[in-house]
Every structure is written in structure tokens, then in C-alpha cells.
Length: 158
Image (cartoon, helix red, strand yellow):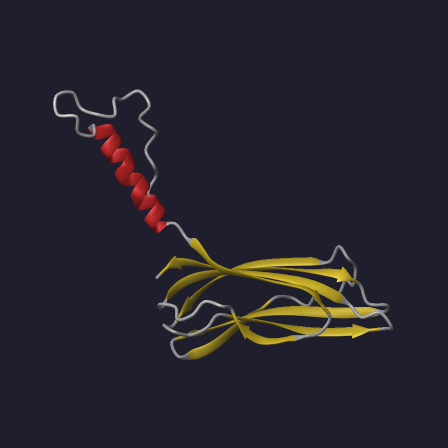
């Protein structure tokens, strides 16, 4: 990404004589446009709350994506601990070079409301293949563990 030039506050916006955009302003707007075009942007977000079971592989609601580099992030938090113990693992899935790949976070086993995990990964995907998320869940005791999960996908380079 280019570095946006300092805002040309001391320069006139228009050139004297023809009223066209002055060179400092033209350069600033050109660089700004390039920065905006190159910046990653959020494609979708999913929020799951009050969950007390595993989630099978679920495609993020994106439609057909171009092949390219994407950033996928998640945050998971135990909102109600199980009576005895619990475990939660978040897995992200994608297809690269025709191969189905997965990236899994460490199992969350602390079983407290302060148990959180966040991860951001870059994935290179094939065209028209889904980005997926899933969880592996276990809970022991009369009170089941309850969790929330937030997943976001951003296009970095298509």
C-alpha cells in the first residue's frame, strides 16, 4: 500500500488562470484513490450467540469468490461455563490448489467466562470455493457450556 502524501492544506485547490486542480491536490487525490483501492475490505461477518453444541462446517455467506488472498478472523468466548468441564475448538476451512485445507485453534478448556480465543489467518483460495468455519464442542456436567463466536472475512488481494 502506498503512503498517502500529507494533506496539501497550504496549497491552493485550483491553479490560477485555468481553474484546474493544482498538482499537489491532484497527487494527493491520486494517491488516496490508490490506497483505497488496495485496502482490504470486509466481505462478511457472522455472529453466533447462545451456542451449546458443535457447529458443522458452515460456509460464510459470500457467494462465489475470486481466487485470491483473504483474511479470516474469529473470536470465541465461553459465556456460560459447564458444571464440570468443557472444550471448544474453532476450525477454519478453505480450498487451495484443489486441496481442502483447515486451520484449527487450540482447544479452549479453561471453562470460565473469561475464556476467549481470537485468531486471524491469511488464506489463498481457489475461485468459487467457500470459506468455512466449524467448532468441536464437549461439555460435562448438568449445566452445559455456552459460547459465542464471531467470524469475519476480508478480501486482501483478488
